[in-house]
Image (cartoon, rainbow, N blue to C red; front, side, top):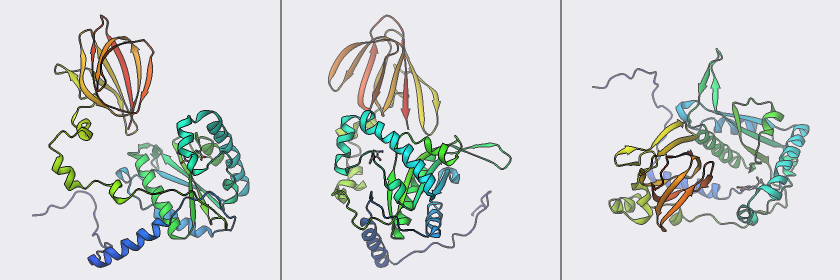
Length: 343
Ligand code: IYR
């Protein structure tokens, strides 16, 4: 017996199934088309009809989103004055980035792309689409509504927007001046919206060139689930981290040592407390920022061996993730620290 759901439903009427051969053919030709997409940095000033941009935005708006709350907003910029203001503000941030903020490693990673702080395309291209992520929305009566997974949702919508514009034969550039707060001011968007990225849209310049870069091969981008299942029961080194607890789940002699101070889709904040003789059983760490509230003498064991460190009050660190370690307070005072994990 099927029971009626207690929320409104409609029949799935518009679903299309294709015969397998047609499925292959459609997807192969879609892949061929998509594989011609390139990020372009040299744009023509040829105009593009506004309705093309609007239809592409309707495509973006079909993206799945957390609790279907559609946490995105797009500002379509075509006026010369506004584009100029955006270029000026972006170039201020970019000069700071290229001359001071970017670590050598980052600059080296960008070298094959030939980017620099000059952003003439922000004025040349006919459209800039500023994508904003709404951390929360408002109901008609003014009440706030929390949005779930806004980053993932807005990323999905933006990917679909790029795909739609490519389908229309237009070039795009995903531009991310950092920080981008200036977009809220110039475009009059509320602080509840975070600038997500600035999409530059138009025809490529006639003589446009693009970096000679490679995409991953199918073999390197996926692992067959069949193979993963076959080795799943064995603690293969690369997967071992997944079998260990995270810092919250890891305790000491059955007692929790970390408590959750805050958690949302963006961040988790833990406070971990270690009286003398108390430690933190073997666990892994996702990328995090750590801050010592009260220091102490800790013995740390990891793949490199065992060492004792004196953690000073106020010490802070950033880690890209730790495959495993275990910790024991070998001092005579209680140590406490915060672990802040972006999700
Ligand atoms: N925002 C800078 C730097 C930059 C960063 C990444 I990551 C890129 O993929 C490309 C550029 C700029 O736009 O030049």
